[in-house]
Amino acid sequence: MSRTAHETPGVPEPRTAAGKNVVQAELAVSEPVMGRPAVAAADLAREGYLVYDPGLADTAICRSEITYIDGDAGILLYRGYPAQQVAEKCTFLQTAHLLTTGELPTGAQEERWLARIAASTLPANPVWGPLFDAMPAGTHPMAMLAAATSVMTSLAPDGASAIEQAGFDLLATMPALAAHAFARVEDRPRRPYDPSAGYVENFLHMCFGDSPVATDPAMVHALETLLVLHADHEQNCSTATLRLVSSSNAGFFSSVSAALSALWGPLHGGANQAVIEMLQAIRDDGGDLGKYVAKAKDRNDPFRLMGFGHRVYRTFDARARVIREVAREVCGKAAHDPLLDMALELEEIARNDEFFLERKLYPNVDFYSGLIYRAMGFPVEMFTALFAVGRAPGWIAHWTEAATAPERRIGRPAQLYTGPATRDLQF
Image (tube, rainbow, N blue to C red; front, side, top):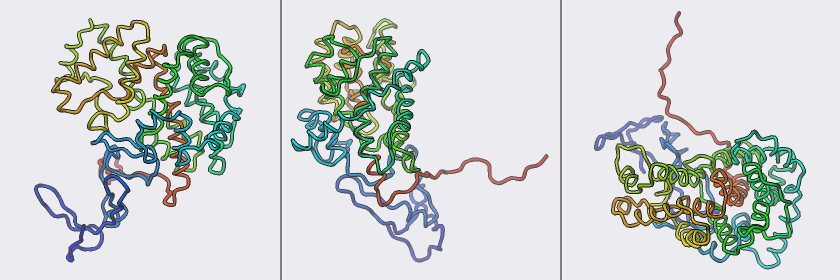
């Protein structure tokens, strides 16, 4: 961008073109490795202007080396590796190593990595039982996890100098906290944390004991795949929240607690819960899918098909390609469930309907993950908590990156003020 000679210092003279004001100014441009370049907002601010971007969809809030998304092409990369390849070839804890350190572990590195996680004492801390028992009846599992991670600030160091250990503690403890929440919601007995078992196997055992869900390799593989594909997703709402909170020098666990609250929303991590609730509502109304597909097409009808389309992806969700096959395998093993049958029929309708194809409203990861969790026997309230278990590596990686960034500043977005102009108070 260039600035014309007759512009005065301060606010440049607006120009009009095609009904819009046009400002010419010299702005620095940053080129990423992949993706769109960015202009420096600070340069524009020196010219007297703000960037107006509701939702920050077109604002880069940081430089990051962790995850890259190309929504038009349906690409998701973890440190450069396609996420679907990582999900097919790596365990969740190998993925956590990749995201938090930058590389997949060698054999010796993986042994040390697993040992550090298994050595954490936080999952078996006696505070958890009384804490979860004290939660009022009906408390959502996400509220429980947010409260529990806040408590972790008093149980373990979590500042910048202790972030490595805090990361191991979070990876070790999140499944235990989710299992405590599950026991509280379902009024089930608590089972001990066993670090010698596999990560996913241990969690399923804490939830379901020795039932087939906890011992079936297909169920273990399904949950591991979901955890890997939920591990990180660039600057989404909860990760951006974590970065914003951490920018005030708040501790790691406090930042995670804030991220959990952001993840809870039905437009974010709660979308998988919303899918099942939508299907239940359709069934309660007679199960006429055609009626609800027509409602979804009607611009004047507020009904939305949950689990279709995505804020970022303009084609098939990169993660959904993998999870779709896992969902079909798991649903085939589950007891007959009319909601699962409805979901698969709805998927078939949408994947062959020109209205959805033209608008690129494909089933997304939330559509399939809800089906898998339900087939396993998790109640709908637990769906977002399971998402949170998988997202822990991404939060560790982003908090660490933000804490060590050379451009680190406290987050303080600007605004366009639209209230009353200055006026005198009169009686």
